[in-house]
Length: 117
Image (cartoon, rainbow, N blue to C red; front, side):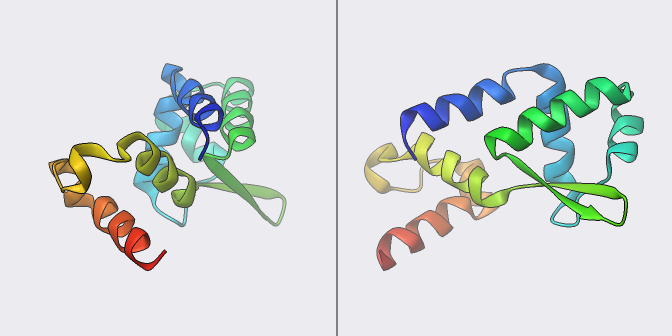
């Protein structure tokens, strides 16, 4: 990941509403949620939610999948992992010093990918 891409992802998450939408979709897991449920949980107007979903989709933090006439959104975990890897690259000389990242398995996945590359 290049610095410009990371900056764009972080800028998208720099807005309170987009961060709330993103975190809700991360918690929802791979099955995601439809906009109606997201709007209800976050008490967000449909037009406002649509704007934020479009922004998060455009930068690649979430993806939408059409189901019938609806769209189900979910977090793009590959992009999230790349961003975390970019932010923590060369941290502490490669040692597992980030307790919260290690607990989620993200640091271990990056180390496995690094070893196999």
